[in-house]
Image (cartoon, rainbow, N blue to C red):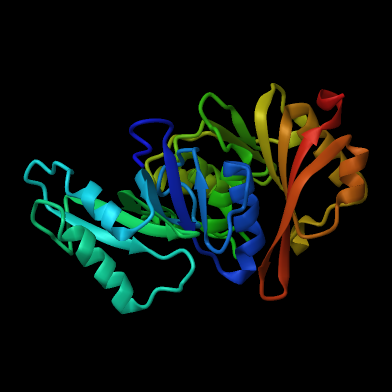
Length: 319
């Protein structure tokens, strides 16, 4: 049965994460796709570009579904390569196939394609997978960890978010970023801003700490990104944005009183209807007092250190 090009596109995504980031991975997938998948893969009609998520590793644009490998091979024989080289990869979804089985499947499908196979740098890549007994085939892509380049910032904080976590948080904040205006009013050295801008998201930042703003500007300039940050207390900011990402201060030099925390959360509600809160402590009571509703949440662990990621909405906008 031919799919994809004949009707609505369907994609197979595979994902992987460290156990410390498993909750974050699941939350990002829920926001991006509406479900967290199963056993390391999911099927969706939603087209998410490779490289956007730090957890998605492979993507198959499904062109054909069949009951056996022979049907896949027969379909693949009709592909016109126009002299391009190709490679066929087997995509594991349940781990039941042996190494020999996987290579045999690749050879059977690849042997039916008219063209020159190239294992290292093919011009076209195809993939096949078995999902609950059904075989699928299509164009295949592997994600490149583009976020790793932003690990080498000239300015660092030992307590700053990792680029992987920051990228996932941005995806949770703006799953459909086109046309959105995003603000990071406690931007620190700009980790979240850099990840957002690298994905083409319209974001601005602010921070009350002049050293943090200086570091953010150095980091943005290092990557050739515009200066979109300013020195100011978020509680004095005006305007309205679609999303706010608030990484609440948590180090020994930035201890917040209950009153300060509530004031920051209330300011976040004033700035945006959708708010992502990053915190190292339980702030549920303060969130309720700020008239925010928690829509989703997770915990990211690094040893004994925990960060809580909370996706919130303004109660007043939901009434």
